[in-house]
Image 1 (cartoon, rainbow, N blue to C red):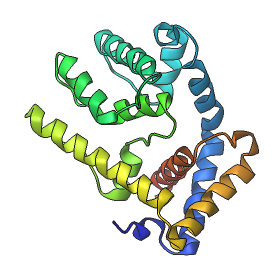
Image 2 (image 1 turned 120 degrees about the horizontal axis):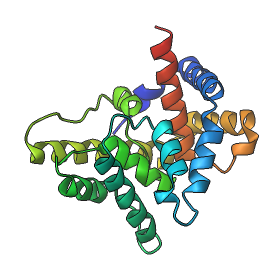
Image 3 (image 1 turned 120 degrees about the vertical axis):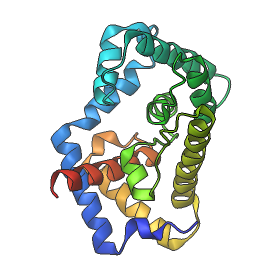
Length: 214
């Protein structure tokens, strides 16, 4: 699929990057992100109140009952352990969480963030990427509809990242490399952040900037 519309012309892409960097700096999101990624590697982190609180604050997980939170972090811990022997699969986690949740909630955004904490090569789905690609989940009362839509949405997100990061097209290479080079230059202490996450930060930051400066 052609995703060139995402970048616009060169000036538009440069502006998106600039917008994102403003938000990244103002929100101090990078040290928070690194702390979460490092803390998740520690034993018993998923039962630690400090980690849970910081993680929920960072990813805006609010107004959730204790049962939901416990269920989420139990799955998180199990998935982190399983990752030692097999790749993390967002759609599998999505189904597992929904089936075990008493209300059968389909939590694509939060499950993708869980998976991306386990493996930083995994892309996140949230409102910013959804807005960019014209994607949204379903609020249908039918569980099968909700889960089916969520799986298709995430497959599209994976296709997007796979295409822009792995396509041999010089067009994509130039635009993506520009974003990566600028990110690693402006934030040199964060050169360990994966290209997938860098592009996620650019998309998130530009969306947030435009929302706050309409």
